[in-house]
Amino acid sequence: MTTVTIFGSGNMGSAIAGVLASGGASVQHVGRGETATLTGDVVVLAVPYPSVADIVSTYADQLAGKVVVDITNPLNFETFDSLVVPAGSSATAEIARALPQSHVLKAFNTNFAATLASGTVGTDRTTVLVAGDDEAAKQTLVAAVTAGGLDAVDAGSLSRAHELEAIGFLQLTLAAREAVSWTAGFALVR
Image (tube, rainbow, N blue to C red; front, side, top):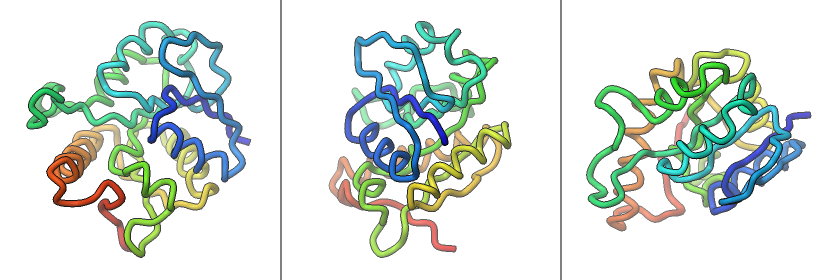
């Protein structure tokens, strides 16, 4: 059985917890300002990107050896017009540099909470794209997501997080402009 700790209990944290629990995972939530002993072998950072640095510094020792899943889209929330990571990099790459003893993945950032909860994007099954350099870590997450009833696809190496964040950025800006709804999203049809 997969054990998961999720930082964040907002829409995304709750939706991810629902998917993983449906697949049989044991889920621990850690809310804002809480301190906890992390019980999950998989740790999901379902918080805004600016909150990640504090989590990483506070829990670095406990995150060593764990699969750490970054779901953030590092938007400039003042302008909603750019990403706040260095050009050519990604939030996930920055997290991986800060946690060299962890197995850092990018996933869920191209999904809205509603599509995770419903399991569909339009008439297609929701697909979670997973990027990272550790094959075993990716397979662990892919298996947990598919056990929860969604599709999951290995999107390649950690460097693909850059492109996943660009897709997430585009999707968020479209929804914020009401060009698409928050229940919509990009579907992967195979």
